[in-house]
Image 1 (cartoon, rainbow, N blue to C red):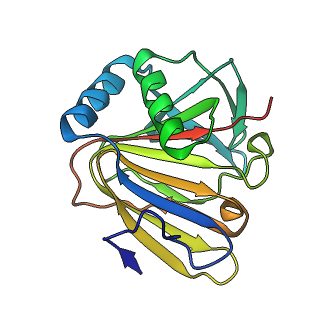
Image 2 (image 1 turned 30 degrees about the horizontal axis):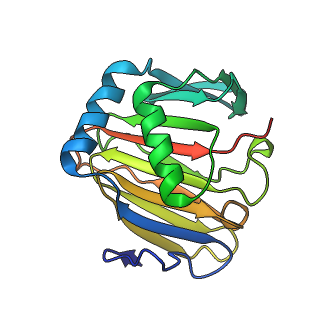
Image 3 (image 1 turned 120 degrees about the vertical axis):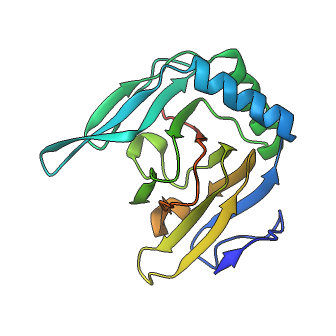
Length: 200
């Protein structure tokens, strides 16, 4: 199921969760300005995970920011949040105004091109709380983004545009997995900012 002409107020998911795609929230000049700032200013590091006792280092790079130096553990590794940069704080403020939701942290992912993606997973760590709201802002290359129901295996996909804002809330993380499929068609970088509320 591909959704190209998304209604801002329509739930992308058929059941067991709520996802709204709000479309582009910046013009192209603004989006490219922020993308270049983040590519230049963020101290990107390769993501690491320990899976079945094996230490994995990904080509994809990450960074973790927050109101405080929150210790965030996922995939058996721990990261400490950096203080907001000017660009990140401006984007956080804009996302909060649009969503009417407060966020205290942001996990950034840098995908250099379509050969890098993200496998099926849920953002359901205890530190994020239950039925949490996550606002996902995309900058750079357009990429397909997919959801899969954990029980029925039903899938839903959409295309995330440059400066497209996706909001996942309610029971979405409990019942659905999401992924960023790899593709040979995308040659440009994409930065994804997932604004979260980290439980203190």
